[in-house]
Amino acid sequence: MQTAAPSPGPLFWWTSATPHARKALVAGGAGWMLDGMDVMLYALALTAIKNEFGFTATQSGLIASATLLASAFGGMAFGVLADRIGRVRALSISILLYSICTALCATSRSLEALIFWRLLVGIGMGGEWAAGSVLIAETWEPRQRGRAIGVMQSGWAIGYILAALLAAAIIPKWGWRPLFVVGAAPALIVLWIRHSVPEPQAWLKSSGERLGFGATIRVLARSPYRSRVFVACLLTTSLMCAFWGLFTWIPNFLALSPEKGGAGLEFVHSTGWIIAIQTGAFLGYFSFGFLAERFGRRAVFVAFTVGAAVSTPIFGLSSDNKMLLFAVGPLVGFFGHGFFSVFGALLAELFPARVRATAQGLCYNFGRGVSAIAPTVIGALSASHGLGTALAFLGLLFLAGAIIFLFLPNVQGEELE
Image (tube, rainbow, N blue to C red; front, side, top):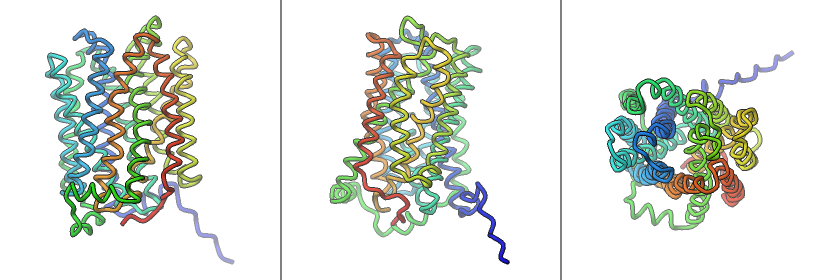
């Protein structure tokens, strides 16, 4: 009588991967986690910065918008760079850029100076995802690629939680400037990445096909890539506008007085709400790849974006009901973040290796660039409608993303060229 073979354990996807794949995931995931920490320090310090400089809501949104606009440029530029000099080198440069410039934000004495340093942070931020996501996609097998990208994306939520904890510990005692100095810490991980993480074979094999920028654009302008670029850019624009409009302003929404459409929580108390939301975000990022393998990428993506479309207005309009606010917050985090886990695998599978990082950087960061207007628009709307109502409008953009996604080809699990 034969004994049934034991089923793989829950960590089989990790233990069965090659050492190179695991190192790539650690590098990309850590870089994205610390990227999230550095970028969200501004949102968490926003109230203190506004009080020191006397910024209006529109000016505060402008700084966030400048960071996003720069991240779009950074993502596109580092996508081209990653195709030319390698995924690992480009990843290392981007981490150094965003970490050092985050620390230099502490030297700002004017709106112009703060915008300048946040512009450079944004370039590094966009570059990290463009290089790191391709590095992971090219080193993991197709059946596990979605899970690996989901784990990478979950690092953003951990970074946000770290930023919230640091802000709660540092700002009340020492102010916002020492908080930004701590943002230099990610630079240390570059030493390990450059020493231990090899370039993926897919990039090394394409060495004879290295294209200039003009030739790359001509490839992407041909069918079928032209329509894929268009729909992907439309998709990321809708969802990035919703995401950055919402999550840039949530810390301020929680701390803002009820008369201005906020929840009126003290800073330290609002940190608990933020951690609850980002715990939901972590679970959303982490579970998306596993759910997509089980139920299909399309169905899970639509479920997440529709969930965000429903939960966001409830959250924005619940400022006077603390229990409902706390209950819905993790759902906003879960649905409003989790769908991002699709992009690393999806965009990698839509394009060939010789133009992959450029295409991925272009599609993802085109949306991020347009979304630069979202924090400013929400800041302006909050002046006339209240911040909670302004946030509720963003549910429509999440719903639009669910519809647009259906126009992309279903390439789940395809081998990468």
